[in-house]
Image: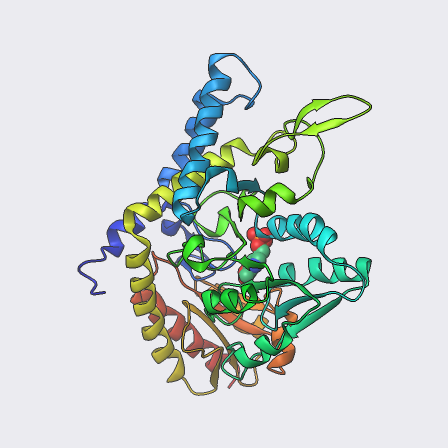
Length: 409
Ligand code: 7TS
């Protein structure tokens, strides 16, 4: 996409924090995979909610409660549209991708997995798509099977397929890797699992802000993402699940709102999605997330993906030309994440020097320690891009890496 059809300077005006200074330098925010910044429409939706609507949902008969409930449920419908889910009852509000995965592990997983059964993941997962399955397998005496990745950071499809067997009860895969940027062939992986009647959970934490997600086209059974990485508030996220699976699953948490009736003898659980939403939800967060997704829809996910891809190509070219810099994660199908190591310099030192230049990146294992082990490194420095980043900012990153070389010469 040419710069003229993507008016990045106008878009940047929507994000007040991008005009902050750090260490006396203009902020260059390249840590979007950790969390993305918020446009004014989201900030205003939060202020507006607390100023004009704040009330508990699904209980008050009074006008304010009706307003809050309506706004909360409207956000659910917006999310349904964003994911192209078949029904709004398939959209469950959770705290984030981590909670979405744990919900499935603790409800669906605990019913489905018995001694000797298996859960299949890949070698590039974030800890939040590893540990919940390890906990489940430990409790149920099951086995976690891991599909390997190649040197580019792509899943070995044949090896993945070979892992699927009689005892596989669930496949849990990232849509996009946070440490490598790899976009997984989710549709193909789902189809392969479904041929064996194995359901598929997709961790979409790094995909929802950057790609057009259609859960029906992907044909996954569960899809989860976090609001705060999708230009929305922290503490809110989404779990999508197919109705027939959600209907069969036991509740996750018990409490108010998730019941139809309670007596000491028997409690009748509520219908979907409320069966999975015990207690007062993050009403403001849901409304803020709805506003964020509206903002993304107005820009167009296809246009966002095209612009970010253009930035990725530019940044890959610039970083590849720097002596001593090695990119980790070179998949053919890749989102705008650049993980790299600088020869002879620890990632934390790279991050600290860049910070002094105003450039915010993440350095470490990115909650993907097995990925670091696979590439035989302790850590990487990671620049993760978003729709408001510019080529000039990538030039500032490159210049900052020049400073790193001067310091460690
Ligand atoms: N899955 C993936 C692929 C992620 O990248 C993350 C967070 C999560 C799950 C968990 O999301 P949460 O919102 O529930 O915490 N990833 C990162 C990261 O790359 N840097 O900081 C957090």
